[in-house]
Length: 130
Image 1 (cartoon, rainbow, N blue to C red):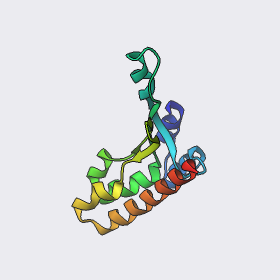
Image 2: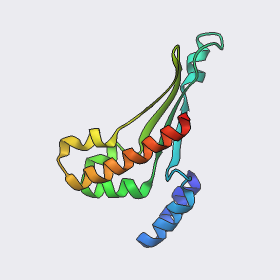
Image 3: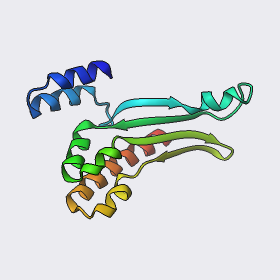
């Protein structure tokens, strides 16, 4: 991530920025910003036993830019979070819905971008679950 942000800092134009981001994206159109192994923390107090739980922060800076241009507060919601965790009834995938977070702002353009983002995230989840 340090190298990625250093490259972003050198971008002089929107085209430069887009080229840098496109190289960093995975086939899903997202990149991973951070991951937190919550399962490792949970297992510390349970003698190494317990469920696996992984909290990931993923997104696409180009989509984030489009959201923030329309609704500045979107910067506090993007990138989105994804939780993959084991429960007694199986593995669960949970995520932040950008559409639900931005609905209160009433900006149709932002909601269009948010719906597209949510659709991409849902496709990624469906692919991971199959």
